[in-house]
Picture (tube, rainbow, N blue to C red):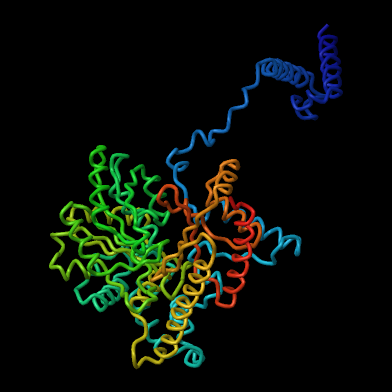
Length: 552
């Protein structure tokens, strides 16, 4: 009797397993083959069958239960931070994206467009347009980044004596002589000492290296101050209109309110204290606590250089109203007219007898502008004066969250503020490179200014400094209506048409702010001199055609 039961169990097990082997969707549930058909052990076969039936039961149960619904993507335009949606940065906005697309088209299909190259006049990025770096700066950087070169005999023939000497001085200030290591969060102390000495030489007043925070260009320093000053939308900053979009974008990102004050185009983009007082009063009447005043000198995008008397009035205004003065001075080397000279706001305040107890002042500087144009190296600093020790601790905390700025940028910032001096081996070549760049920029500015002024319906103030012209264009009513039909701003409409017809990239004034009902565009003076005639001829031909097409 027992033999027949066992035999039946074996036969049942074998039959069941063969059935399941013929049904592929159950094969994953079968035990290993040597357990399935082991005729030498009836108990093993029975056990295998029980195990198999249990798995089948479990499989049927899970197969009958509904699968979870597809979850929506957790990130959408509706779910991200609304402050990100609110901020805009026109300098790299729609027009530039279109230009990059056209450039790819030219590369893929040469001759497919009515021009053979894109001429970028949209951003202050000198070396991307052919400007060469300053030799002394790059020699020192190379030696610091690869100090083993200093011990080779060939170094004396490849590098100037003063660049070798400066590299050794800088390496001795860096712990471990390692440019790939983190530094102090404010920047390497020896480099801050050098920068402070350069500020003192420039202004004639003492500078404290502990007031300096070295940053990856001026932009992170601006963001740091926005984080410090803005707590809610009820906190406001007075900003010039037109302004560099970094300020409007960073205020939006940090949730504050931009309080506009308008520069006077009729007086060469003058900054009138009466306008500051008017806008401050209006903002306060709306319940906005205005924390600071932003001044860009020389101006971006407007190119004006403030007179010292004007600066004194601005300092006095900030002192009387209890405002932090945020002085964007990144174009301090870029002054092209003999009747104007750059004066730092710190120098002006100290000459008025105001010290740390009288005025909170933050001055921004960068290696990206000036004659050096080292945008990709990301070097800069802010000098912070007039803040209490308690607030300074909070600024340091913000800096330490980012660990430190990059070391190459720190080294460059020290070189910019302490270049070769008379008697140094590199002085003559350095001076020739610097003067050549600045004189060429002045010529380019004048050529473009004259070209704009010659065009119908365009007026243009003189470029006293910085790297830009901001001409005003009086568009025909027909063109404005065409822009409205295309659901775009009239100056954007003009700039888009200009790009599609000529390959010249400029930025519409609406990205910088302008008096309502006026239209402008910003054009850099940075393309190399041999490219300027092509820009002028293309723009002139396009403008005439555009005005004829839309003439009232």
